Image 1 (cartoon, rainbow, N blue to C red):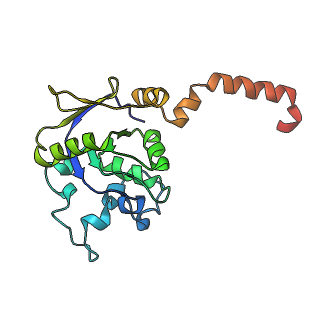
Image 2 (cartoon, one colour):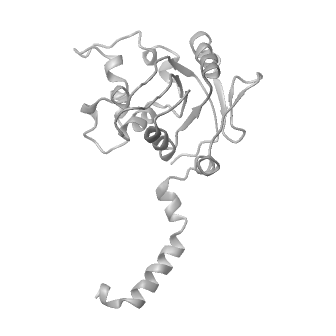
Image 3 (cartoon, helix red, strand yellow):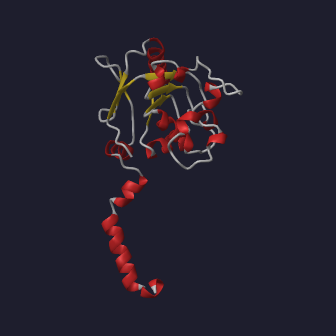
Length: 203
């Protein structure tokens, strides 16, 4: 997992509440267990007509938002079914940070497990960042995880909260597997002890 320390990037505005995981990545794209290639299905039903024609005025089709790495959206982002393909699709597009007033719990947890930073802010602060993204996309937002701040450089940033354990995992690029491997010596020692105590299990 790639570490997340600081990010300066274009923010794409998606002023919609209750963006569910089926909107993020429709069910027909869930056949793969690979984390790559899913950007083609990201917000598919908002980006394309039922006939497959591109909807040019969708925000992620418009420059500079087509290279956005930050998404500013409405409340209850990521609700619906608990599909991990949703953060995979966002990450495959290039989104590393999502700002919203609130998130669905499972989606929120899955973001951290995949190296993405979900930021919860009060509505008035989300609205301010949304307005900035809509009117001044040429001025990127700056996210500093160490300081727990997001905003525009040289202006007063907004502070966000994050659990210390999750913060350290993101800063060091540690997913669940990497965290487990940090205990490899203890795991090997236990397995050797177990083999010595119960050799008949390994015969």
